[in-house]
Length: 91
Image (cartoon, rainbow, N blue to C red; front, side, top):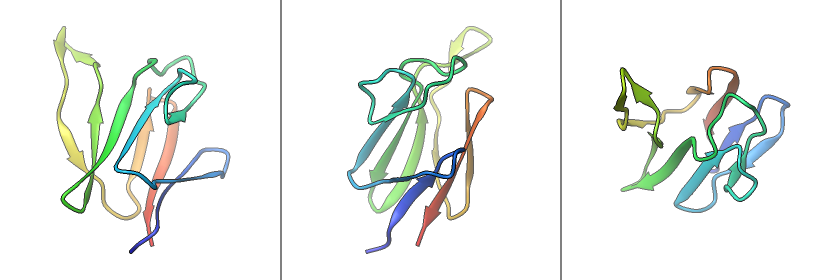
């Protein structure tokens, strides 16, 4: 099975070992990113039928919830809160 991970801005590696990762600035999240531009419950990454999917968790666009799911591909760059850039790696 391929090793799947996120490369964080400081160079640290976060391995995606389960089927769900919750990302946000709250310390109780699976991946806590201490950045004031992130919400407490910012995003979720799920393993669904062998594909890793990124979901927003409550952002709005023109006052309406934005809840689209996007598939993650090798080398994808994800920017959380407009300030925190991580890279999705599948080896």
